[in-house]
Length: 277
Ligand SMILES: [Zn+2]
Image (tube, rainbow, N blue to C red):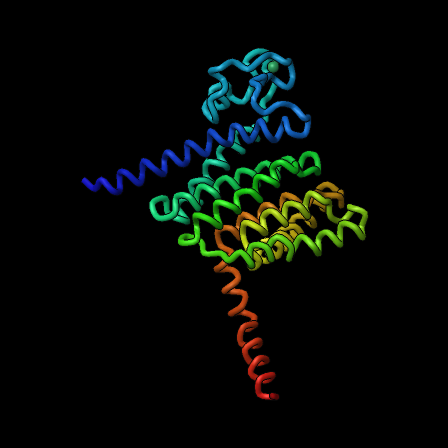
């Protein structure tokens, strides 16, 4: 019997289930934060008939399947999005812990997972209301502190890179926001990129922005074709960019510099300049 394998498998199952439960709380955040309602008070009720939701109908994913996506009292359809958010958070936790290894860097994987949860809230809330909650953004920024203090071995980042990361993207976005009177870019986007930049560092926040621009342009064109609407929230694309960069930022940056030969170009320029003197 390979106990190591059994132990790690149990750990990963636990990570997934824990992620699903946190996903349930994220649904509460997504719906209550825009309304200014309390996150702790349990007053979950059917959106159609107002009947309080029974305790046994609060089990993530399972309850929705048991009820076949319908309210037990009035039979109104319960949006499958609740279950999607729960499963998405579970899958992302599992992905993060597999990527960073549950045994080698559990703390860093936990911090990235928490950031992913915050990004899910930003994604759906901004999609619904075109607003980014400041509290959620501050939460992402605060995660940078334990990352810097405790995770230097699993993810080495210099303080300079983190501080630079907080400003390198947010300042240009701030200028765009001010010039366009918050039409092209909201202040929420600026704060989000400042907080995520602090966590990811300069290089990876630049990668995040690049991904957000690519994904945002493609989806923007598709959504305009479908809805004919050119007004769309940018927060969801920034969230996707930040999430991808948190996992693959280093690899993408490496590939980009190899592909464009930017490193060689800079080395040659440096050699040329030193040759001149
Ligand atoms: Zn109902």
